[in-house]
Image (cartoon, rainbow, N blue to C red; front, side, top):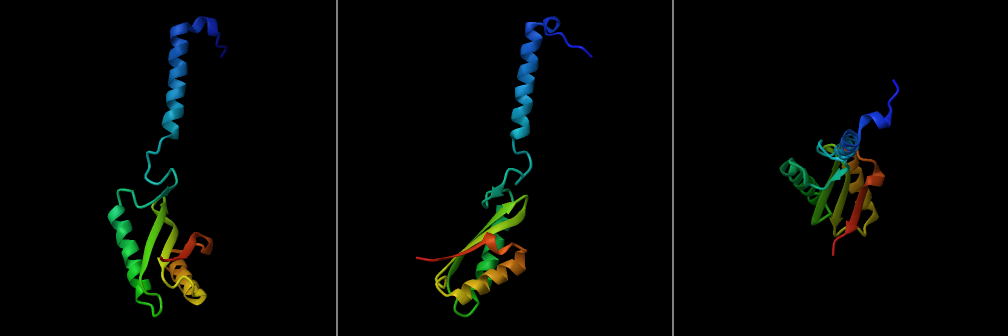
Length: 120
């Protein structure tokens, strides 16, 4: 098939270029929840995300020596992708390892995606 640009016409060429640009824009848009990367508790499942975070907080706070903590889960395609735990025991290496192991076990998240930091 041989396409001659002279036979297409200026109007049709402009329409084809605009359609091409539109296709590029549409393909870059996020139509699937989580497909563009991490969701920080802002998805339509925000209540479930918050519930999960609250459950983790309850579990961790029930461990002797952990004390108060706050948890944030990040998601990629509705799968937990990372977690941050803010706690007053972050200066205790044994507790940090214990928290990391618990989260790793609960969510199958690799250790490098779990961060435990000191609460102010």
